[in-house]
Structures are given as structure tokens and as C-alpha cells.
Length: 398
Ligand SMILES: Cc1cc2nc3c(=O)[nH]c(=O)nc-3n(C[C@H](O)[C@H](O)[C@H](O)COP(=O)(O)OP(=O)(O)OC[C@H]3O[C@@H](n4cnc5c(N)ncnc54)[C@H](O)[C@@H]3O)c2cc1C
Image (spheres, rainbow, N blue to C red):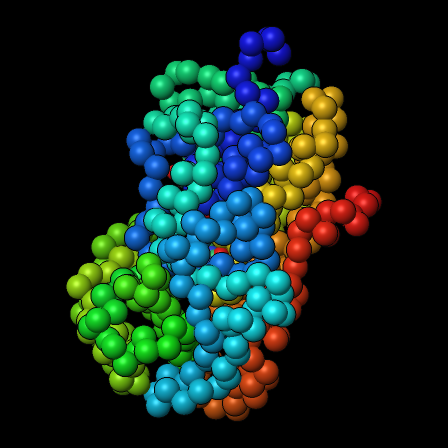
């Protein structure tokens, strides 16, 4: 590696995972360069829920004031029946989350979260219009190749390039798996549905073959919704595109008035075919590792993809902080051995909800509802209560 080589750590992908890693590395005093294929930094217009396991880390990175300015802190998470809206369970968030887990639960517009991360980074960290096409590993580092013919060298390379990851291809020969479901996503001005937003809440209505989620974002000015629909075919042809509001309305005909009135208040929706991948046995080599959706893409039925990416990013930065160049392979192994068991469990649990959330009315559904009567946050201490920095401090790789 030349003396005047580019920064030590190269990150491919400037999504939530890559940007959080860049910030965590920066706070740890490490140089890093992010290579993003898009001509400008942006996120899709939709919502994202962050659990205390991630917000505690973002706060430690110094983002609390900026996040509090744009996030909604929901008071509760409610699961409801599809037809009459009756409550299956109601779990407290708000102050309860802060007391129980030491950090808040947030509902955010993705663009706000993305902007908060970008603004916290020093200028010049992200190179745009840089589509990575290949990675070559060497004993002392790795070389990235880009579509415009340029290349970059680093001591270690991190693939934060999402579910279609180019860097993952260098490690494993798998492909995204279509789930048989798509989601419509929409944002509605909350003044159009005052009754639904009187108390800020995350609400999920469960019904046969589909479920509907909504929560406020952007300081409560907008309500984000996600509506699943079963979809035939491979899904490959329609990864993400505009949808039609009338199709969502038809898919949710007969559901309770809160759901149908929210759909009716939407001007437009996007349509996403949902994919994930199986957990893998290994996501690091000597000088290359994966992070976020490139490592463990999951279905969104536990709302955890971004949360796990943020946990990954902080854990990886902590492992790299303690390593000199010759120790980087051991640092990547330490990161992977800490993170893989947890992200595998979250991937599998997210798939499990794809069946549990969509049961037809009947015996199995009644059993599910009885099991769910323990409110979601209490059932999910293992998710929300996790502190990846404490876990790393006591982690001894096998
Ligand atoms: C409907 C839905 C709802 C969800 N809700 C939640 C939620 O509430 N909470 C939660 O935690 N998670 C949620 N998720 C999951 C979450 O959105 C993802 O897990 C998260 O955004 C992944 O971030 P990432 O940075 O790993 O990947 P991405 O967001 O895919 O970012 C990858 C980046 O890499 C860039 N890139 C790709 N290839 C290349 C290349 N070859 N060269 C250079 N750059 C490249 C891309 O342009 C992009 O900027 C949801 C997902 C869906 C679909």
C-alpha cells in the first residue's frame, strides 16, 4: 500500500448502513471513504421505525438533538384485528421505552434520518457517482473497481451496498429470494385523518393473507403506511415502482374504517416486491466484510433491517478502532462472530412473522392473538434492550 494511499477503510454504499459506519469510524478517529453509486445522496420517501437498541447508539454518536427535532416518539404499539379494529395488544413505548431500555423508540421519515447522518459527516467523505463493479483482495488490503474505470485501494473494504450487493457476490453465490408478497407504501398529510393521529402510535392490523402498518413521521405532519399484498410470480420484474391507490383500496376492501380511510386519503403509493436472503455462514474474508442488508437482508415484518445495520456499524467501528493494519482480518472476524448469531435470529424471526401475521381467521389465529396479548415491547426485550457495545466488551470469539 502506498504512503499516500486513500483512507484506510473504504465503504461501498451510502445508505443508512454505510453512512452510520462512516460516522462511527469518524467518531473513532479513523479515516474512511464512502463510495455511492447514486449521483446524489437521498433516501426513499417512506418511514422507518428505530428501536432503542439503535437509538441508544445514534445518541452516543451525538445525534440526539438532531433526531429529536425530526422524530416522532410514539406512545404505544397496537396490534389490531383487521375487520373490526379490536385491539389484540397494546404495548407502551414513549417514556416507558426510555425507562425500560434507556433509549427512545422513534418513528422517522427516512429522508430525515439520512439527512441527519449526512450532516454529521465531515465534507468530502462520500464520493458520488461511484458504482463499484468488483473487489480484488490482496494480502495487505483490497482494491475496488468502479464502472467509470477508476479504482480505489484500502486496508479493508466494507460492502454496505444493500440486498443486491456486488461485494457479497465475491463471498457467496446466492440470490435474493422473493417472499411472494409486495408492499404498498404511502405518506398522507395527517390533517386529512385527524382521528387516526390524535395519539402518536404504531398500529398494525392483522388479517388473512395481509397486514397493514401505520405510524406518524416528520414531527407528526405525515402518516406513513405500509400495506402488504400477496403477489404471484417471481417479483423480480417489479422490485420497486409506482403503484395505484385503487389497487391498495381493492386489496383492503372490507377492512375496518381506519385502514380504508387512510388508504382513501393517499394521493399516491409506491409498490415494492419483498425479497430477503437466507442467513449465510460467513460474511468476511481477510480484508472484506459486509454490513446491513448486504450481509443479512430481511423481510420488514419485525421492522429491524435498519436497526440491525446501525448495530452492525457501531460494532464494526469499535472492532476496527482497536486494530492496526496487520490485525484487520482478526478485527473483521471479531465483528462477524459477534453480529452473525443475532442478525440470523432477526432474519428468521422476520420470516416467521410473514406466516404469523397473515393467518386466516380460526383456531391458529386465536392462538396467535392469545400469545400476542403480552404487548410487543415486553415480548421483545431481546430486540430493544440489546446494547451492542456492552455485548462487544464481553464477547470472546470462538
Ligand atoms: C417496506 C419496508 C419497511 C421497512 N421498515 C423498517 C423499519 O421500520 N425499521 C428498520 O429498522 N428497517 C426497516 N426496513 C429495512 C431497512 O429499510 C433496510 O434494512 C435498510 O434501509 C438497509 O440499509 P442498507 O444501507 O444496508 O441498504 P440500502 O438502503 O439498500 O443502501 C445501499 C446503498 O448502496 C448503494 N449501492 C448499491 N450498490 C452499489 C454499488 N455497486 N456501488 C456503489 N454503491 C452501491 C445504493 O445506491 C444505496 O445507497 C424496511 C424495509 C422495507 C422494504
